[in-house]
Structures are given as C-alpha cells and as structure tokens.
Amino acid sequence: MNTTPDPPLTSELRAKLAAAPVAGLSAQLRRKGIEGVFVDGVHPLVTGQKFVGRARTLRFVPFREDLFKSHGGGYNAQKRAFDSVEEGEVLVIEARGEKGSATLGDVLAIRAHARGAAAIVTDGGVRDCEAVAAVGIPVFTVGPHPAVLGRKHVPWDTDLTIACGGATVQPGDILVGDADGVVVIPPGIAEEIADATIAQEEEDGWIARQVAAGHPVEGLFPMNTEWRARYDADRSAPSDTSRTAS
Image 1 (tube, rainbow, N blue to C red):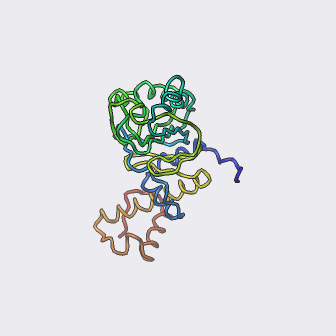
Image 2 (tube, rainbow, N blue to C red; image 1 turned 120 degrees about the horizontal axis):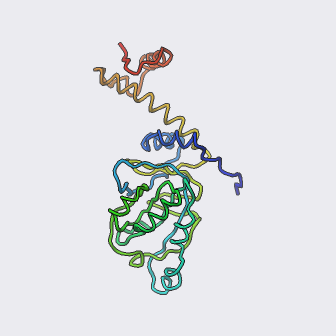
Image 3 (cartoon, helix red, strand yellow; image 1 turned 135 degrees about the vertical axis):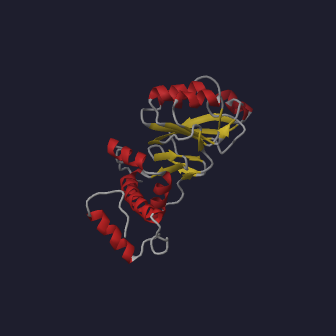
C-alpha cells in the first residue's frame, strides 16, 4: 500500500490548471495511458464556470425505506459533508447517475460556498436550480429535478473512494471542470500534465494562426519536420504573437 502523501495543490499549480482547458488536460492524460478519468454526463449549471480543486467525496446509496429511516434524517452524511468541506476542495457526490431526484439545493450550495469550496460535482440532480446558480459556486450536474433527496437516495458515507459519472474519484484527487466537462487528475502527475497541456496549447495556438493565415492543415496539423523547424524558430525569436510563417 502506497502511504506517500500526495503532493500539494499549490497556488502555482492551481493557476496552471485553471489556465489549461479540460480537453487539453484529457489529451495529455491519454498520452500517459490514463483514460478512465472522465466524469461523464455532468454539465455546468451556469455557462462559463470553471473550477480546480481537490476532491472531497460523498456517497449516496439507492433509496430503501428502513435505511433512509436510520441514515436519512438528522445530521446525516450529506449535511456533514457540506458542513466540513474545506476551502479549495471540490465536493464530489456519487449518485449513480440517477436523474430522478436532487442531491442538493440552494441551502447546501450556500453552505459549501460559505466554506470556500471550489465547486460541487454530482452525477445526480439539483433542485432550486435558479437559486443555486445565484449562489456563485460552480455546480456541475446531470440536470435539474424538483424532488428531494429521499425519493431516490440514502445519504450514506463520506471521505472514501467513490464512482461519479463513471469515474473513480478518491479523496485528494484533483478535479478540473469547464464547458467541456470534468476530468480527474491523479495528484502525483498533476504538475507534469499541467505543464504538458500548457505547452501543447501554445503549439496549437501557433498552428491555428498559420491556418488562419491561409496555410493548409496537411503537414501542419500535426506538424511535420519542416513545420516543426519553423515553429521552433518562431519560439526562439523575439515574442510576437501576431507572427505567421511565411
């Protein structure tokens, strides 16, 4: 068993990941042979929101009357999770992709926001959607549903390995979300993935400028030896983002 602590999510690394698109991060993870990292089916409740943070996990199990009676009321796992999420963490909820019930509403969104949470990700529904959106915390969900938690779920436990949107998420994993979706990054390679993504974005931006200037994509995307030499020469020249290859 690996007991080595995860490297910290420093402010510098957080800034790199915030600057990197999820699509680019996923491409670099794929190059490392890591593909089981997509939280499928979730979308931002408010267009344009993005987040970076470490995972804090909460698991719901399917509704059963006796279990909801013992675990659903009072200060249950759901309320404990929202009360204890820390600044910069992402509260990740396993709801089995169930769309027929909400997993949070405006009061809990307000609590997470007040605690400084970076985001909430749930593969279940959200109720009070307009009020939740107004809170300001990024919320990624499968969609709205007016029903309360107890219609489909029993809040069960926290701070354990869960499945959310088909992805395994462990406490401390790094999640990044934007308009393209949410990706889970193993903490030990986060710095490497962030740096590679930023470098690739720079390269892709240069390619896009050549295409915009009229060059065909053949040999350019991806770059052949000739185009690679031009790119390297441009990178070593004085900075001018408006430059295109002749």
